[in-house]
Structure formats: C-alpha cells, structure tokens
Length: 607
Image (cartoon, rainbow, N blue to C red):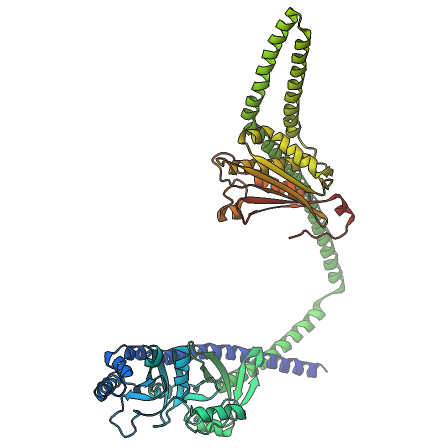
C-alpha cells in the first residue's frame, strides 16, 4: 500500500504540474498572440485608413462637381475620367469612380479599358446604399465586373438632384502577401462571419459558422461576394483552462495551412477592428507548448517520487531516534511558553483597552471644550450688538428716573408712577435679553431628553433677536405639527441652530430684503428641520469641504462651527446636510430622531 500510495502521489504531482505548465504556456502564447494581434491589426487599419481621405478629395474637384450638374457634357466627362485615371495611378488604388444619386457611374479611372464602369448601374451595391443613408461608408466586397476583392471607401456630397457619390476601391493583396510570412495563421472576418483576408488561401471566403438561408439570399442579391460559394470551415472549437479558447484543426484544414499532421491545437485570439465591422483572429500553435509541458511534468513526477522517498527515509530515522520522554518534556515547555505568551498578550490587551478608554474620555472632553468655545465665539460676535441694544434702555432709564424725581417734587405722583412702571418693563426686557445669553452660554451636561422643536427654534431666535432686528431680516418659521418632539441634548442642538441662523444672516448681508426661512416637518420617525437663506448659495468647492474642520469662507473665524455642528447632530443620532435651493440661497437640513423613534427597533434615516 505504501508503494501504491507513493506511485499515486508521484503521478498526481506530475498531472498537477502538467496542468500548471500548460497554463503557463498558454499565458506565454497569449502574450505573444496579443503582440501579433496588435501588430496585424495596426497594419490592416493603417492600410485601410491610408486612403480614407481620397473620396472627399475627389468630391472637391471642380470638374467632378460640374459633371454632376451637367452629366451629358462629354468634355466634362472626359476631364473627370482623366483626373480619376491619374489619381488612381498615383495613389495605387484598384479603381476610383463617381456615381450620381441614382447609382449610375458618370466617370471612372478605367474608362479606357474594355470593362469600364462608366454607364453601369451600381445602385444595388450595399456601399452605394450605405453612402446615401449615412453620407460615407466602408465596405468589403468582390467587384461585379472584374471579380476583384477590395475595400470600398465612399463619400456623399451635394444636395438634391446634384448629389454625387465618390468611390475608391482599395486592394488588400499587398497586406495578405505580408501576412504570408507570419509565423501563425491570421484571418479577418466581416460582419457576415465570412473570412475576407487570410494568409491561408484555402480559408478565404469561407464562413466561421454556417449561414442561414435568409442571410445567404441577401448576400446573393447584393453580390457582395460575387457568387462565391461560402462554405463553412469544419473547425472543432474547445474551451481550454482558465477561459482560453482553443481550436483543433481537422486533417484538411491542417494540410491547407502547411501541416502534415491533423489534430494540432491552436490558441484562438480575436479582437474587433476599430471603425469597421470586422474582426481579426490569430491562431497560435500549441504543439511545442504542450510538448514542453509534458517533458516538465515527467521531470516533476520523478522529482516528486525522489522527494517522497527521501522524506520517508528521514521520517523513519526520526521515529527511531525520538524518545517518548523527550517528546513529553518538549510538550510541557511549549505549554509553558504558550501560557506565558497568553498572559503577556492579556496584560497588553488590558493596557491597550485602558489607554483607549482614556483617549476616548480625553477626546470627549476636548469636544465639549470646543463646543463651549464655539458658544463663546457666538457670544463674542453678539456682544457689540447686545451692548448697543442695552445702551438704549439704560439711557431711557436715566431719563425716566430724573423725570420721576421732578414729578414727585411737584406732587404729580400719577405721572411718576407711570414712569416707574415703564422703568420696570425696561428692566424686565433687559433681564430677558441677558437671560437668553446666559442660558445659551451655560455648559451642557450632555444628557438627551424629549424637547419641543418649537422651543429649540424660539430659543435660537431669541439669542439672535438683536442681530435679526439690526439686519432687518424677515424670519418665517413653519412647524408641522406644532407639538413635534425630538430626543436630543437641547442646549447643544440649540447651538447648532444658532450657528446655522448666524451663517444665514452673514450670507444675506447687503440684501435690501433679507429673508430667513425655517421649516420643520415629520418624516416617518424623523424630524426634518431646514434653515434656508436667500443669499448667493454655496459654491461647488464649499459644498464639498463644508464640514471639514478649519474650513471657512469668512475672513474671520476658525472654521469649526459647521464641523462641530455635524458632530453634535451625529451624537444625537441624526445628520446634517447642505445644498443649494433651486430658486437661490443655501439650505441646511437637520435630521433628528423623534421621541417615538425610541420604540422602533429598525429605523432607517430618510435620504
């Protein structure tokens, strides 16, 4: 059994090695085939495109244009024939001719030859119909008069009855002659899967797949191949490893391409030719690749057998020399080492967890300080306006106090009492203003609770009341429903709203009629709060970097307001987004979970 197992493993190693070497050989063959494919395709496209400009050049000649207007003028026809004959001789094409819009040949380069095209009706030819429909075209076919295969280039010009078609027929025999020295078979098939070019002569004008009767009938009517018998190639396609396409040639096909032995395998590689409905295919022979893979596989099998034999000998010696006591001692040492490693790893893990907890606490504290600093920055911006706003009530208090003293001296107690009542109202107003700023500046404890959205909007508006009044901005607030409640830290979310409203007021500086719109609607289990200004809106760069720390479009400030606002909203389980309104201005959208969201197991944030 050991011998049988030894032989089986050796044979298996050889088979696996054979498959691996075959894949490597196929990869090398594919790389070489790709190089040949690129080279052959470039040469073909270069040869075909070399004359692409000629039809348009023919259409620009004065004698050609005049001939279309007066096709019965023999003198013009003779000049056009002579021009086309000279042009055809200079550029080395097969033929060049001009047709009217009905498909009749008016002039041709072979006008002096017995098989002249002049006067022929070629309206049935597909390249003529293609030029009439598309303005220009490319087409491969066999001539109906001379029976020469070629590549037709066409161009349509003119309008109405004076439309004309210039045709240049290019021969590709020189390219096939160049391919005849290629190291592997190459062929070009057209849209009908007919082989139109190949360095194997027997394959020309054969089909890669059998044609149905409808397609054969259409080709016979168009005379594209001039009555050639289109026989299918009897090729045997195979699917190779790793997606390689293989082909095994039968006896007749092998002999036609210079092989005396049938059954040879080829790697098939194809690619479409840009600008044409053609496809070029290269067949790379694999006989040497397979032979080399077999030789290497045999060598691998022998080396595997020797390695297994040496391994078996080494294992037997080791079993005889190894003692049970030594094995037990080694096992105990390994257990001790593993235990020590686990203890060390556990200690390191605990230390890392403690460091991460400490880092998280430090980050939270830093974020709280940044939030408080953001509040202080807003209060600093409002301090000047608040001082100016408080200055007027103080002046009024001084005046009312002095007047009240004089009225009391005169005994007019009723007037003095009205002045004192007015002084009480002014002090209450000043206390309300400073109280809103004091509440806003208070440091948040970070506890979430149920909060009315209306109280958040009113509180933010109260903080900015002085600034809103000085800017003469109209604030429109809409809540649907009015008693909408969200779950958040009220103090922090109010700071977010203050930041958004302050930015909106900054964006509308200089407007004659500034307008700030705030809207809140219930969207499923979410409250959608929007703050819109009527300013110039956000640029593309600002929208992309809006929530980055230290990014700002203002001349003052650190650029932390929106970044901190986004963090505050995320900590509340919501999101903050910005966009431009279709009618102008910037729109900031704040999503916060409503109180009933806490009772829902799976709540998805709306887009």
